[in-house]
Every structure is written in C-alpha cells, then in structure tokens.
Length: 316
Image (cartoon, rainbow, N blue to C red):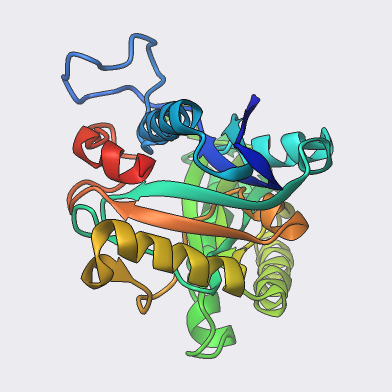
C-alpha cells in the first residue's frame, strides 16, 4: 500500500518505507499483545516500523508544514525478499514520482535511541543455496552395498566451512552459513537422499562468485569421491544495500537534530544481515537507517518484542 500526503506547496515526492510482514515462528514473549496467529510473529520489529510510519503520517497529515508530497510505503514480504521487487515492478517509483526513499529498522544491537547509518555498503547481498545429494539407500548394517548420502553431506558441509578461511582474502567480507541438514527416517536405514541448505552473505559480486565456484567444485569432487551425485542450486535473493552518499549525509543531519550528534553512529562495521530495500536503492537515491531499541535479544528470536518507547523517536 502507498498513501500520499500533500504539503502546502509544490515540490518533490519523498518516500518513507516501513516493512509489515511477520516471520514463520511461534511467539514466546508472553506479552498481552502477542501474535494470535499460531506460527507467525513479528520477530523483526516490523509491527513497530509500521506503527512509527503511521505516527509520522498522523503528524504530517495534521500539520502539512512542508512542500511537495510524502509517499508512505507500506511494504509486504521483506522477509522473503519479494515485496520490494513486486512494488517496484508494479511501477511504484514512477507512478508516485518518488525522488528519494528512506527506510528505518529497529536495532537491538545498539543503545536505546541511537541511530546507525553510513554512506555506501550498509547491509549484505544474499544468495541462498540448497544441495541435493542422491545416493543409494540400504541397510545400516551393510553399508558396502549403499552409496551413503549422509556421509557425503557431512564431508561437503565440512568442506564448505573452509571456503572463507582458505579461498578468500582476510580483507573480504563474507559469510557462508550452513543452516539445514535433512536426511533419513530410522537408525538402521541408510537413506537414498540428503539435503543441505544455507545462505551466503557478501558485499562484492566477485567475492560471491569465488564462493559459488568453490561450492560447485566441492560438491562435484566430493560426490565423485564418495559415489553419489550432488546438485547445487543457488538462489540469489537480495542484493547489497548501498546507501546514497548525499541522502545519507542529509539523513545523518536530521538524526543528529532528533537524538543528538553523540547518539548518531557512522563508523561501525556494516551488517551481514540483508533487506530487500536494496531493490529501491537501485532505482532512486535512498538511505537506510537503524534505530537502537536498547541492547538485548537479536531479531528473529521467539522472545523479541519491539520496544514501544522508541516509536516516538522513529516517527520523528
């Protein structure tokens, strides 16, 4: 959904974006306002982002003490990397003549009311992967008659963990996390298949290509050595979030006016997390900011609850 608030005079359109979607997790906060939908919760603060944008909208609509137009962008499906692309493909930028777009995300890794942003690379690109391993199943007591996909999966998984250390420079920022292993149904059965899954995070396309090439070589080599077949499927999801320098300097000045210069952070390391706001960044000068809700639980934890006390700061 995009809503427009027109100011008192002519001028450019500035977009303010909030993501809305939840995560497929069972909430364990125990709070009165916990999710009523089983297996879905706002574990990334998107409910708070929406509330903050509504707060800003309320003030802007009442005062209209600005020139131009504000486009309030309520975006679905950020967690799956699809929402931003869908809205842009639907012509959002041109239909509403967005000249610039800004996004704000809560951050439990920095102090209450602190703001973190900086020009250039802020958040990483994402490529998810799945490795399908096909072997020959059999009885656990007779392994010589099988081609063991679990053994191959273990060997491939161990080898994947060496890529960053052995194939990349110490100056290259990259993460390869193996997050899924699926195989087998019983202790005495060698399964016919196994599946590995995970994610790659980078800021540089060349670094990402090195990782993908090494993954392919590891899958092929290990499969050949262990008598199975391995198929690597790469799914580029979200590109890196690269903040526009001019928009970011402007956003920093505004943040300093709101929370004070001492509470605006511009010199910390970029995050390996990602956001599909990067799609909008490709089309318009944009900036992404993090607003500290106080150090505590990490986002995507079942007990995370958005800190309502930062909502007025974010709205401002």
